[in-house]
Image 1 (cartoon, rainbow, N blue to C red):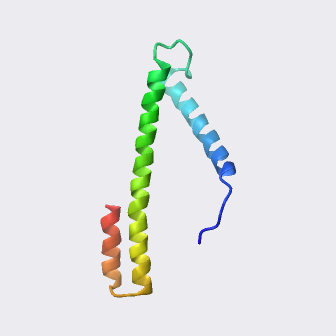
Image 2: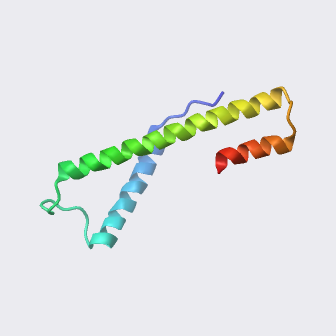
Length: 97
């Protein structure tokens, strides 16, 4: 069973790195960071970004579900071996492609 870990230290570190990266990307792309009264509808842009975020969460969930199926199958094969190593590797490659 995986060990329980505190999320906040990792989140705080990752968030700080991502915020800095986005800051630098904004300066590089636009010559400055996000400004008020910039001609964009903040609500519309935020909503659009939120929808994109939910799509990424769906992607992660779908990938997690596929990995769970694959890992369950692999663990079953390790515990009750009925296939050879090459068959297992081919099955893994099917999921990776």
